[in-house]
Amino acid sequence: MSTKHLQPGDYLKKILTARVYDVAIESALEPAKTLSRRLHNRVLLKREDQQPVFSFKLRGAYNKMVQLSAAQLQKGVICASAGNHAQGVALAAHKLGSRAVVVMPTTTPQLKIEAVKALGGEVVLFGDSYSDAYTHAVTLEKEQGLTFVHPFDDPDVIAGQGTIAMEILRQHQGPLDAVFVAIGGGGLISGVANYIKAVRPEVRVIGVQMNDSDAMMQSVAAHKRVTLPDVGLFSDGTAVKLVGEETFRIASRLVDEFITVDTDAVCAAIKDVFVDTRSIVEPAGALAVAAIKQYVAKNKTKGETYAAILCGANMNFDRLRFVAERAGVGEEREALFAVTIPEEQGSFRRFCEAVGQLPGGPRNVTEFNYRISDAARAHVFVGLTTHGKGESPRIADNFNKHGFDTLDLTHDELAKEHIRHMVGGHSALAQDERLLRFVFPERPGALMKFLNLLGPGWNISLFHYRNQGADYGHILVGLQVPPNDNPAFERFLDTLGYPWVEETGNPVYRLFLQTP
Image 1 (cartoon, rainbow, N blue to C red):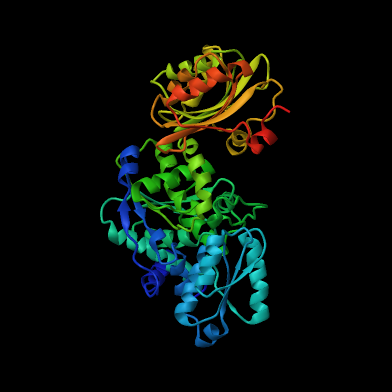
Image 2: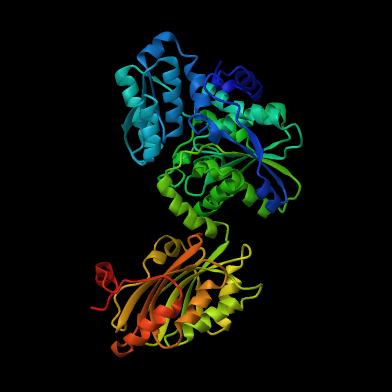
């Protein structure tokens, strides 16, 4: 049967007869109760993150490989993958007693590389993206006589992935308005769309891509496959420069709508999934949830039912710091500002009072970075909690009305990625500076209480605070204490009531911050 003539009915037959359950489980379809309440719509999570390789990819890989001849399996298979398909192929090969060579981009998270090796796969690292790895894999295929197992552009792989839609419609018998599906090369959405449009054509199929890796969306708009010159790597599972021929054909005809999401929205969605499931999905696995939130905000829907496929959970632990940092901004639960205040005693406190007088009630300070640098003005980098999206411009206007020149940095990539970690440096104005670390109970108003306890006697020349979501907050403070005031300052520290450590003699402080 030529793939050019395969229709949804043909794919329906292939999906119904797909061999996936030798290795895959029928994953749960669970309600996301907290997110559903917040969005006023019912959100269902298809838990493909709970598969044996923490991704849906083993379905298509096994369905393809189980249909190979004994001779083909004896020679071995090869694939190119950013990680999840690689694990699927390696697991299928182990199950079928076949050799598996896996070509992975050099940018692949170490977690996925080690997982493939643990399953018996032979890993070859090549290139910066899936497309680079694919080209090299085709070369090795010919050289070694291996059978190529494509991660998405193959009818048997597509049919294997389509079993997810079969399960969703079997598990949820009630109204279903849309299914949201992440797109890399298009194999998952091709299988899902074929099944849904054959069985329940009224259900909308919505494809989701990263805004810096939207090859399918651009291709459909151009009515031809478009090769991206580069792709973003945050969502490495969907970082594909060129979608497949068959997947492009299917998506062009059957996908109802495409949505792009950005990094901050995906980080916020990872947190949303965690809140409801206590599981951490990888960026690609959270794309569908991020899109549902965007779709509801745009269309103002209420009372509808949406399914999101959590397609993978192969997350490097080291990336969680970045995700947590950006999740608040992505949901706009945190706003960032650069505020200019007069360099004079008491101005710091006056600004904090302005924070406490914001319309809608006081906000928690999530971050405060400051380093004395100018005799007349001080520039502080501040983060505040918000009550909802779109609030940061109003907060900035309020600060301006209080006489504090304010720049809204909430959507500034440079500020979020780098500047927030670089506020500081040597300052000729920081004479007689003593550097101290304080620990204090993390509760609303605690930062303001701390500032009040410092009193007006000593000028603050450095301040760094970041809310880490823990029970205790940590503050680094530089205070200008003339030598004659040292006895009084020691008495002040003894009566302060907070644990503290003096860092004035720390060589790191001397190297990067202390006045030469």
